Amino acid sequence: MGFGEEVRRRRDVRGLTIEQLAERAGLTPNYVGTVETGKRDPSLSTVLALAKGLRVPPAELFGG
Image (tube, rainbow, N blue to C red):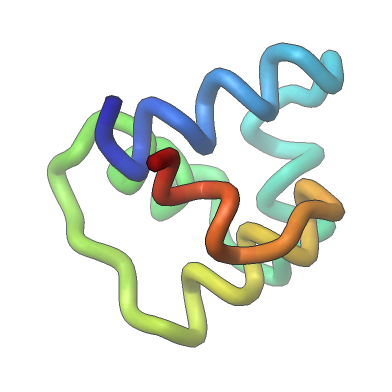
């Protein structure tokens, strides 16, 4: 499972919309959507922001 797929899975488990996660992470909903679909490779700061928004350690978003 790729990074974006894991972000989407965890967002769905928490019952969050893309808009809610984007607000928590300080990102735009469009940007979060492109990360989730794998159309964009996130920077380290984006990884950290998404992890914070999902309230998980960043490493957990990379599976393994």
